[in-house]
Amino acid sequence: CALEFKNSDGTKRLQRVDLSGANLRFISMKNADLRDCILLGADLTGADLTGTDLSRADMTGAKLTDAILEDTKLEDTLIDLKASKKKP
Image (cartoon, rainbow, N blue to C red; front, top):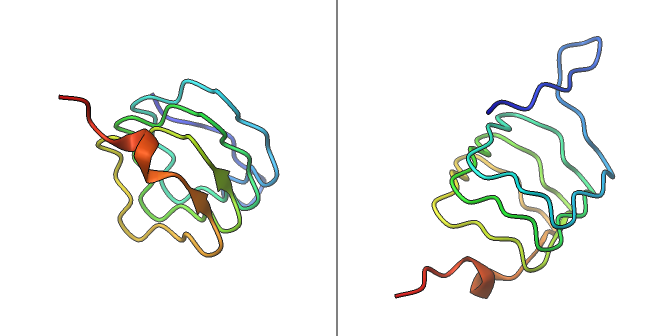
């Protein structure tokens, strides 16, 4: 699944959007602008966040198991890594 929300300049900007509890499993959000987004408890399992700007996002309780975070900006981002642990 690919997130297609583009502005006139071709960029994916979803700044300040509340995606709390959203099922975003295996979604591709490459190079998206998600600054200041609220992703409380969102399921990002297997999501491709390559090059995404998540600066100042609140990802408390978000599931990031197997998510791709290459070149992702996480400046001042709130992340609870306990939510992303794989269960035995």
